[in-house]
Image 1 (tube, rainbow, N blue to C red):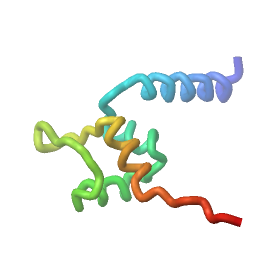
Image 2: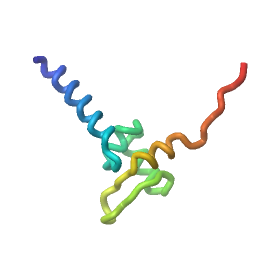
Image 3: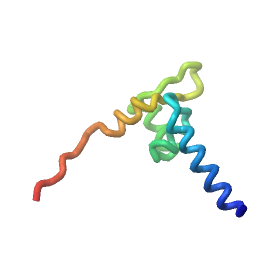
Length: 80
């Protein structure tokens, strides 16, 4: 099998596994939301995104809270 094909399939499997988790690590939250590492770090430092820091160092995110945060400030479609 081609190496690129194997890596692509592995990437898809990893994303499926992240979809099953309830609590995400910092890197998983970046992948899940599509937010860059630097911007997500800024959001956590300002307290603008829900997260946990249980040991004072590592950041964790509840997936349901992330989804709710992403869907806040909904915009109604313009009527034609």
